[in-house]
Length: 198
Length: 175
Image (cartoon, rainbow over all chains, first blue to last red; front, side, top):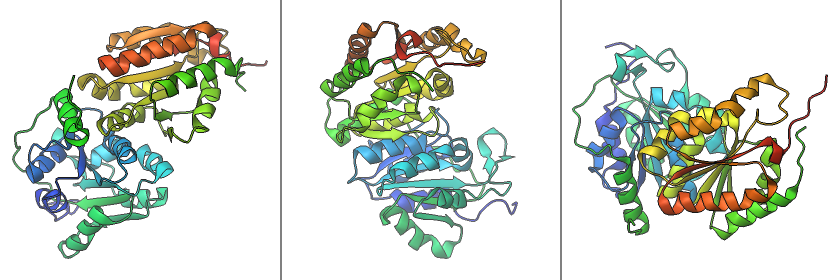
């Protein structure tokens, strides 16, 4: 395995962040992140998994965080996805929502399209960019020994929080999840707001 | 500097936003709608979200709606081009969406780089599935935006209101 890959397991990390927290509002980016979050807490009413709009997950999460300041909102996305929406780091800091965490599952590669290196794989420091943008909490999570403390920060620290998790290049099996955005929208709003679809 | 030929229509449009419960205004600044942005910014009940790139607008509005807020996206025509891929989210999910676009290249344009907008923007929005309204008379601005807002938020439609430079004022160029 290349040194550009990390050692942490994406399914284990997402399970530790989301497992049992049925109140979190979760937005996922494209590719594996949606499967990881679905594996962590099922095809959940409060998961909204993007299947397009690459780069947009942190901003969907920003919209939620501003509308629901008392809820923890977590965006989970790959490093290629984050790189496509880097401007969102600046946009998030213009509003500084304390309840928002952005979690990048960083394997340094575009795994879906044939393992080409991302800019992160070439050495770009995503957490450093977030810190420079003004995220009060921004870190790499790379070592097994720091998982517990840093997962807690993702869950609880006054944010916005940015976590770049250095994961292996493994692609775990897919799990059943819907790609119907209208269905996800209606069930999300019904679960969160009690709005009956009309 | 962009001229601003009347805060009047902006005041009327701001009133439409208020009357229809708009509580999130997201934008990349544009001279043609600067008075409208200013009026909304002065209202504490409206959450102003300035964007780095217009492509964030479709995502911000979708997140707002999922969590119970009602937004609009204000931008320039060149920003609409930045949004096309991400509008796929709003279209796929039938998210209610209103964008008010101050079009360049539509009237007395002095910069050829902008002229494609005036020629193509209406068709581009229609081709991706939006309902499109064009406005070039001041008295039509507020009623059209109100109709568009109702269509967006009652019919879960994606709607663009395109404001001509006849309304917003053409940018002045000097040789």
